Image (cartoon, rainbow, N blue to C red; front, top):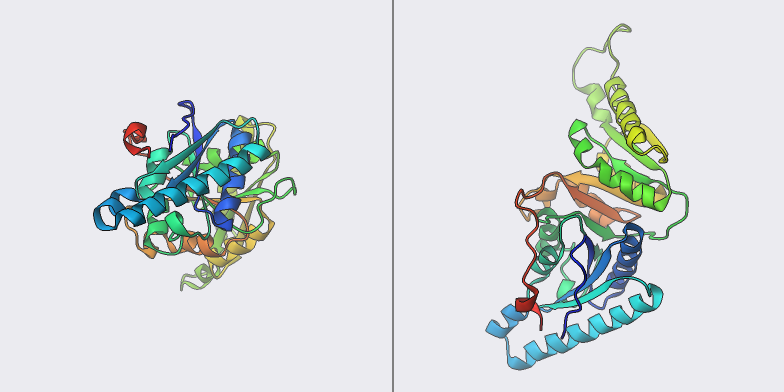
Length: 307
């Protein structure tokens, strides 16, 4: 199958497999690419490198044929709904994680559905999905729950501490292109009130004051660089940060969280909060890695991967 290649600019890469969840991800990704003025890549991982070594010729040909059909159907729908979009379709010989990571370029985004079948079936259900997130060189969006735009709901950014400031510009851009507010939300554990320390006096800083001041200063900084953007800031106290953010996702158009870039593929490698959001959030979730490879994102050689 010929791969139609786009320009060298940032791109939105969507993993497609023929499932309804992947279809929702493709439509969300097309809208996202349009908002940001990016090209859209639809990628199906046929894993032919492995099949050619360990499976029969018939099995490999079936995977190739099925992947071609899946991409053709996805391409037809996207072109009919987004006729002006710069669209690339790509049938990869590689496994799902490698296919997605290799296709995304600097400044791009990976988009996957919350469930799947075929080439992307294990995504978010097992080690393949966890690896796709924790090892990604770019932000990953998991399309879940309500995906409509224009409801007036904010883009919610889950802020823990000052280290999160490095990725908040990403959340600000998401809110800006959607013309909706950006909400900075800090969750404090209710258990922190009962840690055995003496309660502060009236002259001392009360618990939560530093968090609120930090968010206030952060919101002011974002407003200064993006004067047209409405920035809200708030703190919440809950027994579980994960459950509080899942609840916040009910009234969000997009939930953005930062995650340290770890190479472990265990569930705990993501952190329990991010792991819970991937499975229970009520809106799409974007996971932004804290750090990037200093060498940039290495794109795969298309000539070696096209089938």
